Image 1 (cartoon, rainbow, N blue to C red):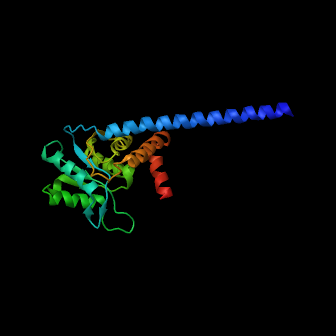
Image 2 (cartoon, rainbow, N blue to C red; image 1 turned 90 degrees about the vertical axis):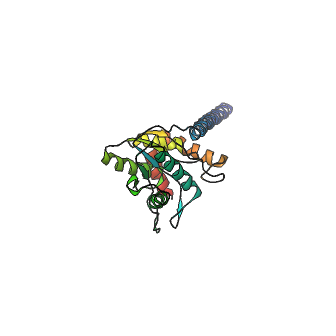
Image 3 (cartoon, one colour; image 1 turned 90 degrees about the horizontal axis):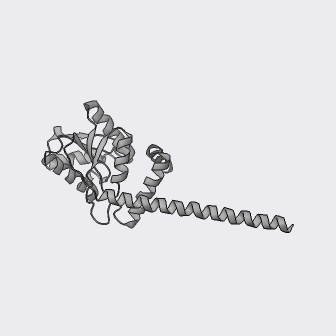
Length: 214
């Protein structure tokens, strides 16, 4: 009886140690991922490319949010500097909505002097859907080299997804207004979690999981 109890105690201790090690490894993994996400949000490489792709952001009744407007200003600047001949805006209307970020973004760019033939609108929802829609649109033109314009801490995940959907991308993150687009520590933690999980299960599966849970 005593030996059986001693073995059970040893087993419990082993399980506790294993759980602790797994949790410790997960925390270290997420911290390292968070650092990578933070560094990517500060790195910009605006080179000559075939198109600028604007992802993320939001709109309300056809009006761009400050976060989306920040992205659009970056894309407009890339075109005006002659770095890209085309700007692709993404984002289909949400269910029950008339406007989407693609249509809102296109209107914003055109109202700010970017010619309509320079702007292409792609659909999609979420980073995976938006970049997938952009990749399909660009593939029809024979293009795949792009500058990805995201905001907050989404740039790292955007570049990873761009590669997954067949784009060769360089980062040009927008500076999102303070307090918007997940710019604080909470936003960094959530994005690190999304990247950490996406690396393990795949960003496509992460997108499906997000849609499933709403």
